[in-house]
Every structure is written in C-alpha cells, then in structure tokens.
Image 1 (cartoon, rainbow, N blue to C red):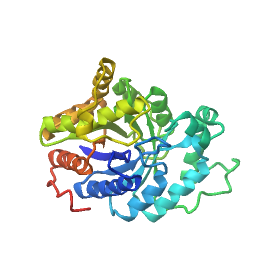
Image 2: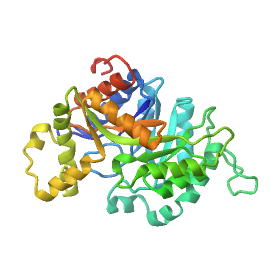
Image 3: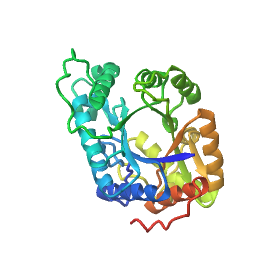
Length: 342
C-alpha cells in the first residue's frame, strides 16, 4: 500500500503560526525518511488554528529541506486565481524540484464569506466557470493550446522538464467526472464527506478519458487517522481534535488545538456529543494493528491506489509518532526516532 501525508498545518494552543509551519516542514522530512509517497499541504484563509494560507510558499521551503518525497498543494483553490499564474508558480516549483511537484486543485472557498470576498470579487461566478478554468490551466501546464486559441503564443515559463502533476480534489460525483473527463488523477476526501465515496470513485474510473497517451485513472483516498501504541492513547489524543472542531463550529477555538487536559475539561452538551460521534465515523483511531486493518479495508472499499493520511493532534511529537507507527506497521520500516529530523 502506498501512503501519503495531507497536512493542514494546525496550530496548537501553545504554538505560534511560525511554530506550526516549522512543524509542517519537520513532518515532511519525517515522511520522506519513513517512505511516504507524497506530502501535500492545504490552503486556508483566516481560519483560526490553521497556519497555511499560501501552499506555494511553504512548498518552496519544504522542497529545499527534503530530497525525494513528492510535494504538492492539497489544494490550490483555483476559483481565486488566474490559471496562467498558477501554472507559472508550479512550473517554477517543478523547475526547482524536478519530478517532485503535484498540483492539487479544489473549488472550495477555504475560509469565511468575508475572507472569500477579500480574495475575489466574483467567487461564485468563478466556481461556475471552474470546469473551463481547469481546462485552461491544463493547457498551460501541458503547453499545448491550439494554434487558434487566445493564449497559443504564450507559455507559463519556465517550462520544466517534468511538469507538475495536476490532481483534482473533491467529494462528489461532479468533481469525479470532471477529473475523468480531463484525464486527471482524482483525490476523494473521505475525511470530509458524508457521501458514499466508493460508487463515486467507481464512476470516475469508468468515465476516465486519457489526456495523454498511456494515462490511466489514479485514485487517492484521504482519511483522518490517529495512531498510538494503544487504542486508549489514540482515543485520548483524538479528543483534542474533536473538541477543537466543536469549538470552531461555535466561533471559539481561536487559540488553536487544545491540549488533552483542556479537552477533557470541556463540558459536552447532548447535541455536541452527537456531533462528535458523527465526526468520529469518518476517522480511523487506534493502535497500529487496528490502523492497518481499517486502512486496508478502506483501500479495498474504494479500490484506491494510495491512502493519504491527515492527522491533527495537540502534540507535534504525538503527530510524528502516529505517522511513524503507521509506517512501521504498513510499510515495514523501522520506527525512526522522532527527534532525528528535528
């Protein structure tokens, strides 16, 4: 099984944003050491507790501190940007870090309505035009506009020897079919979906049309997972993430992910307990053996080529150890010292 990392660069209540971003870099280094296939970092805007608003900036930093692991955005929120600029930026990254760059694309706002308005005067119109914008971006990435096209005489330079690989991220049939229509690999966000994803992924594979010779459908399934040496410890670590999620829904949680002790002191209402139980359904929490079994079940259910893991806990050391334990159990690698890369 191929494993990868999705990092939302969470800020814990005892951290500054700079601390969180440095921990993201360390996580990418750890993933490389452990044999994870790729490391992606997400884009969010003015969301308390999440540090990364510009994945392209972090990717240049992370690329300079790693050697082999594929790195990418999960995702660039394309409705906010012109395709030409996105292509230029990721061509730059692909030139600096050859054959290592992925460009995940999404259409979500990634923040509040106010932040969305601050970024764009016509976000909803851009969402409506998203399919056409994706096609335009692919032409810039492939440098293959038809001769009669408006942009046929320009290139999103520098043109790298190995262009970035564009992925479409989504949780719906609409996004899956758009990926298939454009010959793009597809990432299904199991961790943020209430839909039955397996039929959606099946439709993607059946509808796939290669954009280039030799292309085949590829699927990553992204899941929230927390692993510890014991199930009890993993459940305890997960409580911080659960409580933080509830706090954010109430407009609280401005100090970031609470400590386990702080989370234990939070008084849950009956409605919040129901919400927590619902959130937990899309998460995998347990010891290494349990994680291996559940991730294998997920891979089989989706027919996924790769599983991408998102882990939010209070302690950076706990987060790194979670990825280490999963790698040791599934990839068969030694459990590296979490301080080695730091």
